[in-house]
Length: 231
Image (cartoon, rainbow, N blue to C red; front, top):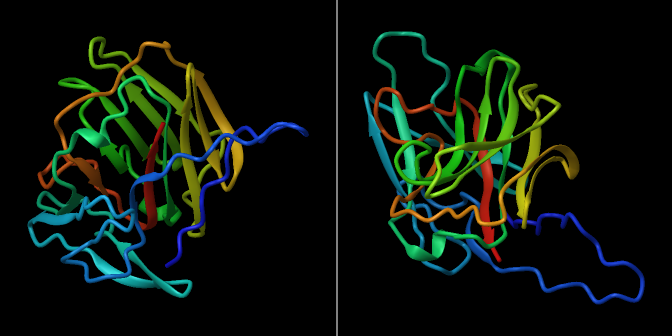
């Protein structure tokens, strides 16, 4: 599927020249084979599928291409778990630079849970982190930043749900000291972050959960057009 460039938060005023849009660091349209998920940015961050207990992803039709469906909600003692992960790479770390990241998501209302991760790099308690999640049974998405030196979790939470069984485009965007969350191009939440907040870790980019293990915050819907920009 062709990925449209996400809308920018600040358009130039008349007479001003627009700042160049940073290039994609990663971009996944999910139109290849599920076992080999190619980074369409050209930067080589091909994803691998990690799973336990029979967890798997499957392609589903979305527009002229396809999207990736993750396992549905499970309340059993043993549940299928799966994650898509990149290799470790320094160019996925924004440090103190501006960053934007997002995805197209479809999550039915009956599939919400206490915690579902769409994408993340790093962990809040052991390194540093940027993350897009859909947490709580109301299904409101949020954006997270955690500094490498101070484990305070900074959250911009959407005022609207995206768990309604329809496609929504979600974008997280840090611009200096502001972290915004956009849903379908509309600003839905904001929080302030320190200017020196830095995200830098040696963890892979994880999509659909934080790992292939029992407590993995499994996403239970469908994802498409996952992307990250830095700078």
